[in-house]
Every structure is written in C-alpha cells, then in structure tokens.
Image 1 (cartoon, helix red, strand yellow):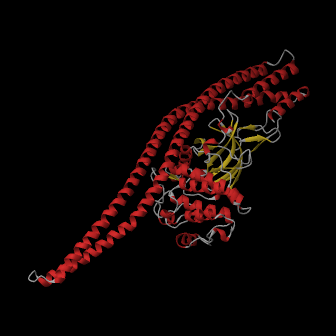
Image 2: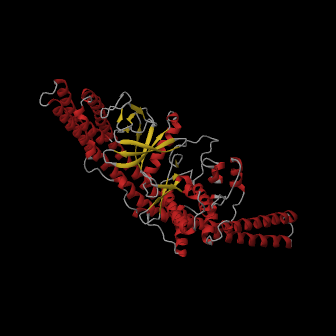
Length: 576
C-alpha cells in the first residue's frame, strides 16, 4: 500500500504518483495500514504488537464505527495448533456475551490467508499498567474485583477456563461517571471443557507468577485454577506486589506448590479482615479449599462491599449499549459522494480549459469515470443492503447469547448454592465415616477375641471368657451398626445435594446446547451473507482501482494548465 505524503490519499502498490497533486507516492511504514479487510474494515494505525498477533485501530467503513482488529503474525499462521488457539479465542469470547468480557464482532482471513479477529475498541489501560503506579485502595479495588468475578462466573458457567489470567489481560475502561468498567481479555489459550485438548503432555501454558499448583502438575486443571490466579491478582492489587517472588520459573512453581503467601495485611494493613480471608482462600493450595466457584466469590465480594459501604458496580446486563454495536442506517455520505464531487470538478476542468470543445479523448475518459462511479454506487448500495442483513443476524445471535446468558447466570447462582451445600454435606459425612471405620475396627478386634476363646474352649467347656467375648462382640457389632446407620443417613443427604447439583448442571448443559444450535444456524446464514458481501466488495475495490488509474490519466495532461490550479487545490483539499 502506498500513500501521498501531501494529501494522504492511499493507492495500490503499482501506482506511482497522486492524481490530485502529482506528488510521488511512498510506501506506508506498516503495509497493513490503509488496507481494507473483507471490504469492510479499514486499518488505520497500530495499537500494539505481541508474540502472537498485532492489534490495529480500524474502522468499519460501511457503518462508520471504530473497532480493533487483531491479526495473527504471519509466521505463526501456518501452525495449525496456533490457528486453532486463535479460533478458540473468537469462539470462547463470542459465546460468553458478557459486558465485562471483550466483545468479538467478526473474524476472517486476510488476502494471504492470515486469520484476524474484529473486536470492540477499548479506551483505557490494562490493570497491569494501572498497578505500575502502585497498589489500589480497597475502595477502588473491590468494584473491580466484583466485575472480574462476574466475568469469570459467566465464563465458567459456559465451561470456559481462561488459563492465563493476569493483570495485563484485565482492561479498565471509564464509565461516564468516572468509575472503572472491567473487560476481561485474551482467551487465546482458554480451554472449553467440551473441546479436544490442544496441550501436549509436558506442555505448560500460562504465566508462572499466576499459575495454580494443579496447573503446574496437571494439564486437566479445572475452573478452580482460575480462582487461584484471581487470588494472586487481588493480592497484587492491594499489596502492590506479588505474594511470591522468584528468579526463575521453576522457583515460582515450587513456591506455588509449597510456600504459603505472606498475609495481605503485611503490605496493606488497612485491608478488611473479610477481604483478606477471601483472598487467602482463593490462594489455597488445594482446589477444594478455595471458594466453590466464581459465583461464591462474587457473593462474598458483594457482602464485603455492603459491609464497608463500597458502591457496587451495576449488574453486567445493565451496562450501556456501546456505540460500536450501532446498526447500519444508510450508506455514509463519504463512501459514495467523494467520487461524485471529483466528477463535478473534472467537468469544471474541461469547461474552464476548453469551453464546449473538449478533446474527444478527455470527454470519453470523463464518461468512463461517470460510468464507473455509478457502478461503484450501485455495488455499494447492494453491499449495504447485505450488510444490514448481516448486522441483523449478528444482533439475533447477540440477543440469543444474552438471553441464554441471563438464564445460565440464574441457574449458575442456584448451582453455586447447591455446590456449597453439597460440599458442606460431604464435610459432615467425614466424621461419621471415621466413626463407622473405628466401630468396625472394634468389631474386628472383638471377633478376634471370640475366635481366640473358641479355640481355647473348642466348645468343650463353657468358659466365662468365651461368654464375655461373645457379649463384647455383640456390643461392638451393635455400635458398628449404629455408626453405619448414622453414616448412611448423612450420606443420603450428601447424595441428595449431589443430585440437586447434577440436576441444575443438566439444565445449564441443555441451555448451552440450545445456544450452540442457535449459533450454528446464525453462523450458516452469516457465512452466506458474508460471501455475498465479499463478492460485492471485491467488485467495488476493483472499480476503485480503475477509477484511480483513469483519474490519473485524465488529470495528467491538464495539470500543466495554470487556469486549473484552483480546481486541483479543491481536489487536494477533498482528498486530505
């Protein structure tokens, strides 16, 4: 892609000079800047680069809305595993549909086959950047924590485990009132519990400073590993430092596995006791010693906020509708009027230079320009009509995801309570199981005593010891029976709690399946619409290239005429 340094009009690589001001063209520094993806997304500037992808600021030219485009680095795009992780980021974030999780609008491939994602454009900074300026007060930290918990609860309800939670993957935007709006980012290595694993034996993915002990020892770590990472992040938010410091990755792993974290109050003495207790429970070495799920963490955080009178952020579903979701109204004037204005200037040039006797060749070229402009306008109109259809499909899919998300959230809260009750019920079973085992041990000892006396007497003499052994055995079996009956009663309660959890999880599974069916239907319809848009936009882009070349040929012989200087200035101003 080339550009004119004076008016900044962009041209294909084969062009050599600007038809407006005649200046030689130069290559853009980043070759993707100025290009258009899928005929819709105009790349404007680089926002950031990482090992896996580059993120650009872009604009959807048909609806004139800003967005961010994440394009995989070409060197990685040939790796099928990396491509699958990139695809997974799209699928994971899209199906979660939560205002505290970044929204993915679209995906596709560049002309050279490199995958890209189109996301909402966020204004603000990462939590990691915020923490470089020091720790947060609990008054600011708690509302951020609440929103993180909401996002994570939604992800886990849809069986998506993030696996790389860290401050750099948590973005802070500002609401109109100045408070923080949290966005959870980067599901690039997230794993759906329903997906085939991408991780090979021996591979560990994530950031060592935030990895749960079970993530280090097993690739099958579940949702609780995300809670551990959140505990580390919460600790860092309040203390301004990590609970564990190490010089290398193995040392970090060893500390996560063995070393207890220092108390939060050692570095943040004003931390409320309930919040410190929650953070340390999140960082428990064993998963079953952490909160039962993210819903429970959210409930505990709300209780802490209420006790401290810290304002609770609005529910996620109550967030304002972002302008980036705006539906197409009509074709933006800039998209169809620019060439119309240029055509009018070209007519003035011929009239001013030649009166009513313009050379036939120039008149013919002007007629060709007008024909191409009409064709461009027609294809643009068809593309916009198809884009409206696509936007309606996207809205249908988004509304479905939100509707199912509300339902899953409600069931998720009930399931969280049921899990908590089931965990408590199973904890109550433990002492009864222990008592039964102890009673059985006593009964077995009594049996041995009976066998000893039976051997001595051989049932030839009625020894008192034999009588006492039988009486002791009877009492031991009686106590064993009582203990076992009590164990069975509490175990039945625990099993009932397990069935309640299973029933709620089945309902959640059915909702997820219904959403998957809706997504499949919408995706098929979108694919057809996108194919049609791509065809129309390819024709439009081809005509645009023809127009640029034709305009350059038209203007070339006229540029030497001084009486046309003002008109060339008008073209330059319009291009700029």
